[in-house]
Length: 123
Image (cartoon, rainbow, N blue to C red):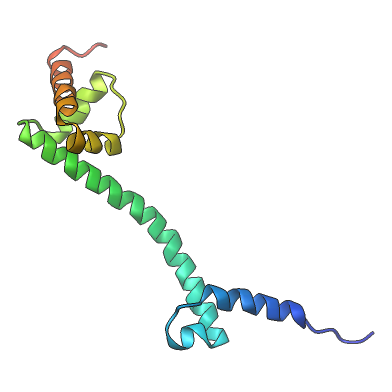
């Protein structure tokens, strides 16, 4: 039985790797070993940073809500606890958008949070 080699399949595989490395500088887009390293590492960084982006945005939203609460002489932690007690379920992204684009609606939320904190907690 004759010995077979990968032939076209190897070329196709390499082509996929090289196209993934397009735009990389120097040997990272030209040399096979460097291309494999660069593409593998870029995939790992992409995986990590997709999660980091979620953390960064949440921090941004919390910072915005905190600033809006401080303008109204209210603390962020009390605001979130008051919303929880009032059973108002808005995520932090929406709360930060309200704080920026609709301050009147945010004022109403702050008042409801304050009122919910004044009431004794139901057991």
